[in-house]
Amino acid sequence: FMDSILKKGLFLVTITGAITAFPATVHAEDTATDNVLPQVGIEEVLSNCYLADKEIEVDDYLVPTEKGEYLDMAFANVQSFLYIRSEPTTDSEWVGKLYPDYAAKIIGPVGEWTKVQSGTVTGYVYSDYIIIGNNAEQKAQDMIQNSGTENPEDVFTYAESREEEEARLAKEAEEAAARAQEEAAAKAGMGQAIVDYACQFIGNPYVWGGTSLTNGADCSGFVQSVFAHFGISLPRTTWDMEHVGTAVSYDQAIPGDIILYDGHVGIYMGNGQIVNAINSAKGIGILPATYTNIVTIRRLI
Image (spheres, one colour):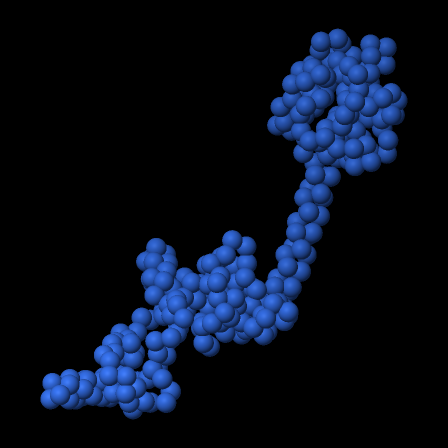
């Protein structure tokens, strides 16, 4: 009996000291929070211990003596993205997104859903898809170590709100459209330069097997020599030219594209015309782009 009293007295002294030394704060863990300090107080714990006449583990009721710097963080453990929702239900609207390894701060209890704050976004994420607790601490430390940055906060990426994402996507679409217009203008300018250069040789002779723009060229030799002037290398025959560049349709054709027919090739000028080495009778001249069946149209710029 005396032995039992001494044991219980020793437990009371030990746990009272622990309570004095450590604040009763609950931190998010990877598992369910069954082993936390009861809100009714340590007296209830001791009373239950005496009534049950059983031993309990003191560590079950103590807050960790050392708190990791990143134990209150969560990281998205997903392949695509994780919605942050306004309420802890899939029926609620999403207010932000966490992409793979994006970071958040845990600001509520960890259950089926966890309340987090990331960037300007506050809401709930489904707990199965986040890394928390000691695993989050380790991941944060690894990310910092691997980054080599002097400021740890620069390592973590946080969520965008729905509004921020919409604004970013709209800006990216606008920038992409502007780049496409610039590229189209550059191609059009280059294509027109090719056409202007080729047209300088209208009236010069057609020579079978020739590649000279002044002394005579055949259809493929003419096209090959014109593009060579602009640093673009082409094969010698029309059959090989059918596979160069990128195929486009006739309604997409722009000046500088080459149009191939059965055994013939010309450079599209726009307005339904080609400049080409026609034959020995007509030399280098202009023909309707649809004077015969088109095999393919190739874009080289």
